[in-house]
Length: 314
Ligand code: NAD
Image 1 (spheres, rainbow, N blue to C red):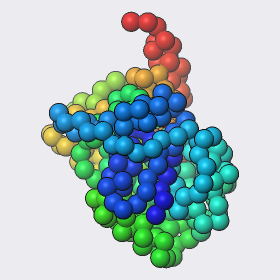
Image 2: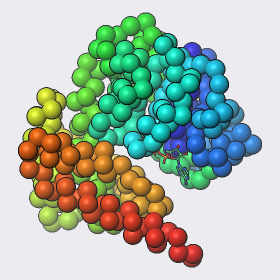
Image 3: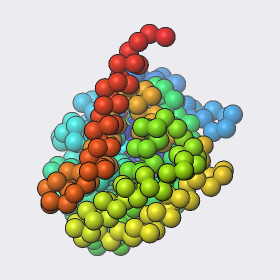
Image 4: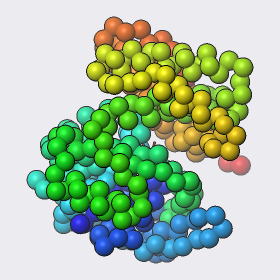
């Protein structure tokens, strides 16, 4: 299978190097020129603990990619999906499958504007990774990836994808309700990403705040009403338990979620695909979502302020 990883940052780099250990052909596509150059010059430098290994996988800017692929795995941030697909229009054929694994809600709808539903595989992953700089990633933890063809029916191509992911050690799980899995992870991100970014703390510090349960419920209660309105099988109690489990010592308590890291680097966040999505859906359906609306506006304020502070030379 010819596989392109479109968006070869922390997660794209991780999935690409793992898939390249199988007999499938892998290529990185990324719009960050310094990153592409570094990968081609030195290999993607993959840090695991104290070890660093170069992975020689070809990389190209989107405008320089030709030919066709059996599978394009989209691993941009949610707001990078449409620009990436726009730049890849000429290589998406009637037999190209596109897999979307970015966090957040509404990503599938973005992909459907470019690719017919029968060619889309939707998913969500709890693997993790960090992008240290151009051509450098650090692998953290282990995980799995939940997948479902958007058309609902598993076919030979989907089975081949599951086999490739299994051989790569990515621990694929074939789901019959991937939307429920996507919304469940988004609920966790709406709480932990947003509050840790606003309160300037890690997951464990947030969990030790005396009022953390009130803050969690403020987001989740609105989230659940919107999910119900959208006919998503959202289990409020299960989502709440998943979040509370992150505060256990060890586990994820020392983690600074990606929204925190994006703000630290002066980069835009995925807030419009998390709390912002809930607020927008609520507004469109007359469902009150004041907590999610306010949190979205606060993060947008922080995006402006952190971009300014990153510009100040040290
Ligand atoms: P990332 O920021 O590492 O990479 C995304 C894109 O941003 C890449 O195209 C990369 O080249 C570009 N980019 C990054 N830094 C840049 C810079 N300084 N200048 C120019 N371009 C730059 O994103 P990611 O962490 O791989 O996340 C991809 C998706 O996966 C997101 O939706 C994220 O929420 C989700 N996700 C991430 C993790 C994780 O542990 N990182 C875990 C699960 C899901």
